[in-house]
Image 1 (cartoon, rainbow, N blue to C red):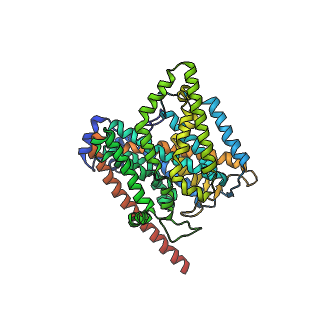
Image 2 (cartoon, rainbow, N blue to C red; image 1 turned 135 degrees about the horizontal axis):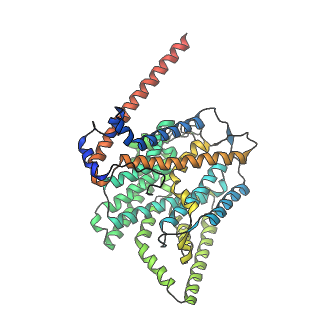
Image 3 (tube, rainbow, N blue to C red; image 1 turned 30 degrees about the horizontal axis):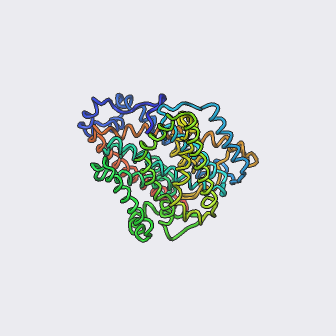
Length: 488
């Protein structure tokens, strides 16, 4: 996770006070003291309260923008020229204004992976905004890239640190699910509408399980090899044998089921099966790459230390071979029609990902610099993914796909609408990134205060029940009043 920025407030209590607070119980918790209007508690929790208010305000904005008639909705219109111009223009701006040296210039350093996520997310979002169906296969590769990084990043962390503490795991789950759960509740949407969230959650849990179970074997090459092979076998059994998938997930159909109201289906698990099966293997390749990362980094260092002629020759050969392999992949795989491509994608998505990594790291200069503008966008990919449904695009109905555009100006000003809605959209996404991280630091403390964590979970569960009952009663009263008024 990213550290708190300079403009953020660290909402955690000092370490010296945490154990005392945990022992104090629910009655003296910050939440209960704030509900009792304790002045000192209100001052101490000012940052958290502001984050809650801001988060609720943004959810209200989502509802107004997506479910009311306050704003007009526009139709999508694809222009390859406009899409290419926007992406090229943004890339040039990033190149000339945000090219920065990486803090640790190693293979796939943090700044480089954030940059990678950033430019992929821009194209992914433009694909949705313009409904650019001709780049569908590329978007599939980009989504595979995100899942690949889930395997790579989580394996790297757990393998290096051996930190399988429950609070750390909860922080990951919070990052992936807190915002989407709030949006689902506020807008009455199913979890699977935002399929990226459950997909990354599942594969994050699978990486955690792969390394956490029998973690004493993680330092053994044979142990890691066995775990990778077991992961492949589990994926094959749970996805390639389709009845097994349905047997596992049918009890969770209430959570993972989805049917588009504009195109309903009786198979509520089809969407979950389709989305998760496309990238079911690539996270394992990410884990394998993370395990071999030190060897790849050592090979690059050896090339960097060679004589000038030797370095030039080897890098030229590597680049030529990589480009040739990319051309072969593009001709025989990428160029396939959509349905045919989807059938081979789970087994071939690792190819363009690996080729991109090679090209992006072939020289020290490529590893030393990154585009921080794309890196910044890469930090808020989750928020931009969720927010696009309700403040850039529009669904109009619960569980609807974002088939429309949010507009602020008449329809004959498409570029002005794009500029205005994009400005609001990016601002809202960035604020959500900040407030959800602020709230995470309040709700999920460090591993040293697990009692406080369980207390917070218990209080959240009670709060959810109370709010659900209150909402049910309010809706019930409103329904009765409507019937009374209708009878008058």
